Amino acid sequence: MVDIPIHYLKGSPLLEKTERGDWIDLFCYEDITLKAGERAYISQGVSMALPEGYEAIMAPRSSTFKRWGLLQTNGIGVLDNSFQGTDDIWMFPALATRDVTIPRGTRICQFRIQKKQPEINFIPVASLHGVNRGGLGSSGE
Image (cartoon, rainbow, N blue to C red):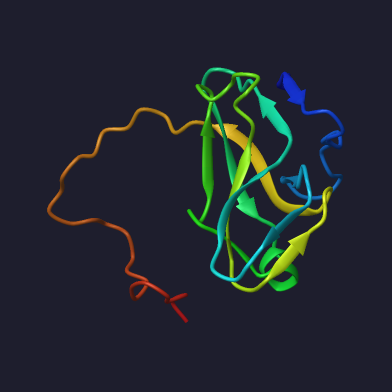
């Protein structure tokens, strides 16, 4: 068990781990209206102090594009443990593909906390000894 200090902006829903899955939902902190083509940082109403050696990965929920026409502009977000001040509010960087109003409290993204990648050393070799699967996009079938 890892304890994570979390600061909530006034009125933000409390976060909780779901019974199924490894991701935790985040919520729009305020109503937001965007026109098609507009970008915005959508406040999630929380800041956290992740422990040394941990980071959070933020990604859209699977329904975010379907319901709201939003794309996360950087694919996924990485929040490392240096981003831990009270005013380091977590934001969802969004691009609207259509005119949309998203109500306060809407779940639009999710996150998980994981250990950072360990130190690694790449070792050049002439060839690898694994079995070739047929390249990108091939399941080997």
